[in-house]
Amino acid sequence: MMTFGVFILVLGILVFIHEFGHFVFAKRAGVRVETFSLGFGPRLFGWKRGETDYRISAVPLGGYVKMTGEDPKEEDADREDSFAKKSVAARMKIVLAGPLMNLILPLFLMPLVYIVGIEQPAYLDEPAVVGWVEQDTPAATAGFRPGDKIVRIQEEEITTWEKAKILFASNPNQALRVEFLREGEPMHAEITPESSGYEGGYTGLDQERPALIGGVSPGMPAEKAGLEAGDRIVAIDGAPIHYWGQMAAIIRAHPDDPLQIAIDRNGEASSLTVTPILDTETESGLLGIAYQEETVFKRYGLWKSVQNGVRNVGQAFVLTFYVLGKLFTGGLSIKTLGGPILIAKMTGDAARVGLSSLISFVAFLSLQLGILNLLPIPVLDGGHVLFLTLEAVLRRPVNIKIREGAQQVGFIMLLVFILIISYNDIRRVLPIQIEELFK
Image 1 (cartoon, rainbow, N blue to C red):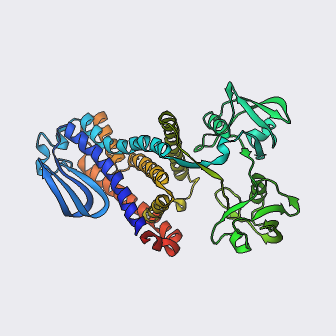
Image 2 (cartoon, rainbow, N blue to C red):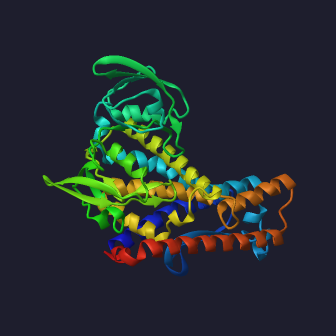
Image 3 (cartoon, helix red, strand yellow):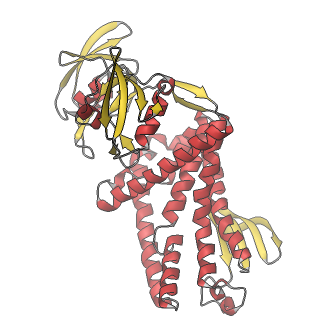
């Protein structure tokens, strides 16, 4: 039950922030706001102040602001304080205010995550010693080897992996001079991080990570073969394995090929055969194992928290557009998307991990809500912006029949989308985890 309660609370916060944006700018523009509701359906309780009814409604999955004259066919649409009578610029501000509030909220929430404290990978505070170099990457082309210690990137001194990662990620497609030590001897190389879309610049450099399994996905080849969390992979097909990246490269290169894997389990050696499945999105092998990263709990000062928070929001912003681009171009299957059931589960999981995790998740959801609402689809805020833009260009409102037809099409598109992601939820989450929503 905790998961469901937290989900409703989070949804309420995000909807309130969104609708509050519409409400404030409507009031500023002199538009009569009839209703400000959290939830849909019958009114449960509330109060009336001035012309506005502030209410809590029965169905807690959303909310709305009702303004006089939103529908130009209303009897009151000709009132001076109606939405329809305001200028295009004023109406544009009112419409944009909702999603912009959702985009702004993460800029306040993410710094709070670092002030409260966050679990982060322990290696980020360690010296930038290369543990593995992925093949066919900028790092491999530049000639890096395991054991190289990065000491300077451009003019910046490097003392930790965190600083190296930030500089690489923030300079995609930029040639960088990297100075490093190889067996104590100073060397240098030029590396150009590839643009990976959602992560910024990618080099192929990895920290030193032992091939130790931290988790096994249910129903995947690793679990079926008998691999367990805590197993250390020591060899694959007779080749000694020292690093996680080394092991992962072999697995990715052998989809549908049986692999003889030697493991160390609590000091006892054993061997088993595993056949990676083909990951159709990456065209590579997949076992269903995860690395359990050693983490440390850290708190940051105000300025550092703001820097880290804003950077994370920027990365999440790019990530969302990267995913949308992949969806629209067919590079990502819509089957990967999740709907309300999955979001509710993830909200509960974040709440159980801790306050920082929950705040971070709320910030990410708010950002996505703001971006998705700006898509030029009728019935969304972005659709209203589209019609207002056309009105400004044509110097007259778009024909009401055209708008109504477009909104019907937009509503059907949205309904189909909701049905698809709900089906994804049922297929992926509901059979085995719906009971967790009420824990």
